[in-house]
Amino acid sequence: MVLKTFGWSFAVTALGLVAAVLFGGWTALGIVAILSVLEISLSFDNAVVNAGILKKMNAFWQKIFLTIGILIAVFGMRLVFPVVIVAISASLGPIEAVDLALNDKDMYQQLVTDAHPAIAAFGGMFLLMIFLDFIFEDRDIKWLGWLERPLAKLGKVDMLSVCIALIVLLISALTFAANAHQHGGAHVDKAETVLLSGIGGLITYMIVGGLSGFFEDRLEEEEEREHEAEEEAERTGKPRSAVALAGKAAFFMFLYLEVLDASFSFDGVIGAFAITNDIVLMALGLGIGAMYVRSLTVYLVRQGTLDDYVYLEHGAHYAIGALAMILLVTIQYEINEIITGLIGVVLIGASFWSSVRRNRALAAAEGKAEASDEKTEVSSGV
Image 1 (cartoon, rainbow, N blue to C red):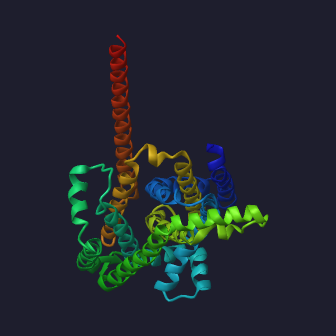
Image 2 (cartoon, helix red, strand yellow; image 1 turned 120 degrees about the vertical axis):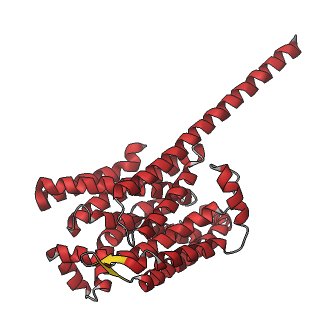
Image 3 (spheres, rainbow, N blue to C red; image 1 turned 180 degrees about the horizontal axis):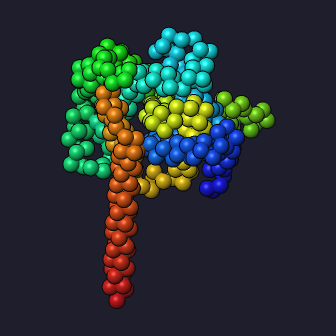
């Protein structure tokens, strides 16, 4: 099961490390290995959240997530995205931006750093909305009941999450962005940039999340129609196409997953510059890490881990909320990537341990109930 799920990740790791050695020797191999570990640690919460969505999709779209999805994640977000950011922020053409990334790494890193406030605002708002919509929803299972119960009651107020997100964005623009660092430590006013980028992140979440939610509500209808179509295909002997089997709901959930992954990757891409400014090594290291995150997502789905450890999803969403706030704070202040990764690991670890304790308590209660039933049967027999 492990080899089947992580087989491609192992293969990509081997190829990536060999490519690193051929490109820059053993030093490059070490850098790629460090970047891979960095990406996995920063994106573990992403795997847990993705698993909650992916388990609603059929086997076809799970394969698409691991194939086409990983191409988008590696080449789109870890290689193309930083170049696009430089091209936009410096008003360069795509060819000039690529030439800059390959031949003037210091200037390239500086331009990406200058674009950080816009990236952080967009990603921070997208992730913050995910956290707020989760925490304001009334759920049967609650991890931190003392906090989640009153928040669920507040969540009955329409558009509360949007209002809070906009307030947080406004505060960020008036505090962190108004005194952001740029060009060797100089202070510049990035308030307008942060506001526009943050609103862009909010709009993106509402559009993609709204479409995903709409089609998710219709997923049962799609499944019923697909089941009828499959029976018809068996009767007529005509095979159905893979696209027909997938359904609109799965397609839009796939888009939602890709945007979600893009938002999670912002901190990894920016944090990678603390280790190297070589775009090739960055793509190799972050790409290997992204592949493991994808495989871990599928593994969690197929093992039913989220069903067995019910608080994991809660811990992952709290980690998302923490990451969203960290991204907004980094508009002005630098925060070590190790701290960012540890916060996510600690929150998910705590939710995992709480789930284990819950399972033990339930097992003990069931054992006592069975023992009580046996005593009752014995006494009745006597």
